[in-house]
Amino acid sequence: MFEFQWPWIFVLLPLPILVRWLSKAQNRASGAALRVPFFAQLRSLSGEQNTPAVNGNKFHLLLLSLLWLALLGACARPIWIGDAVAMPTNGRDLMLAVDISGSMSQEDMIIQDEALPRLTVVKAVVNQFVEQRRGDKLGLILFGSQPYIQSPLTFDLDTVNTLMNEAQVGFAGKQTAIGDAIGFAIKRLRERPENSRVVVLLTDGADTASNLKPLEASKLAAAEKIKIYTIGVGATEMRVPGIFGSNFGARTVNPSADLDEGTLQSIADTTGGAYYRARNPAELQAAYAAIAALEPVEQEQEMLRPERSLLHWPLLAAAGLWLLLGLGRNLPALPVRSNADDTKNEAAQ
Image 1 (cartoon, helix red, strand yellow):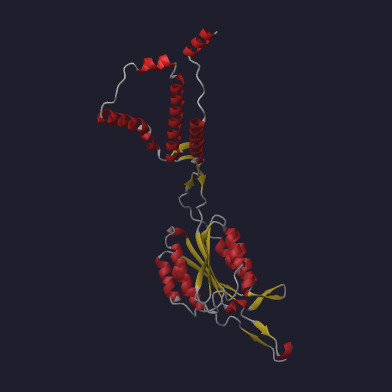
Image 2 (cartoon, rainbow, N blue to C red):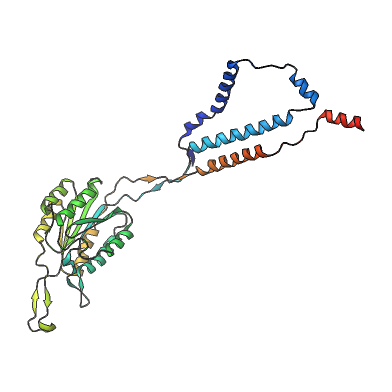
């Protein structure tokens, strides 16, 4: 559908006529000019005719009128409005907060008898989770000693996965700032619809670096009606070899001894979420699968009508008309054969 955004501009269409009329009135008022009543007779006796001038003036006036119309058309901002397109806004606003502190490099996640770093397994599982959230708006927070926004809320889930895969242990420091990460999520979600605010926080330790304590942050999140699901990742047993890699002196340790499960459970309970313990890749997948089962809350669907500017067309027309006017001024006038010339030629013959 074609329309002008500023159609009132066309009230200026008679402006050149008004200016011309006012200028003529001012000239008449400035004083009487010398009048020669028999000027037309003198011109006819000399053999001059005014037909070409009149025709030239009419053509010139036509070009000027079209030029003025084209300029007004450009000022009125012509646009083409396409058909309405529904925006995918019926999902949740979900922030993923992932721990990338130094302990996430611990190799205690066993897949096919191979011990892999925690962050490597988390990336793979988070990628699967993100692919299942088509229709949701996802954001990504990475945190260590301090949190930072890796991706704002977006429907572009492929970019979220790419940014997650690019995360490296230690990029945000070696310590863990759980409370500050929750605070970042609150800032991003507080302006979103109340019934769709969700945070999924994954960590393998305890808060050691936050300015905002985790339990205080959870109370702020509850006040903003933000639901937080927490995941504690890390095995409970790991075999440490003895001297020179032998079984002599080997021992079994708990690599997740620093995990503060009590705080993670309290955060989830305070905000109406749930806490999941992921000791291995299978439990980690199960935790994200449970969260992925959340039913999206229907929101008011937004409709978008794409607009395409047509401003260049009247501007091109104005440029072409201006070029024609310039060419018309530079062309030499054609000689006019008068009746007097014909009479002279006949007399000479």
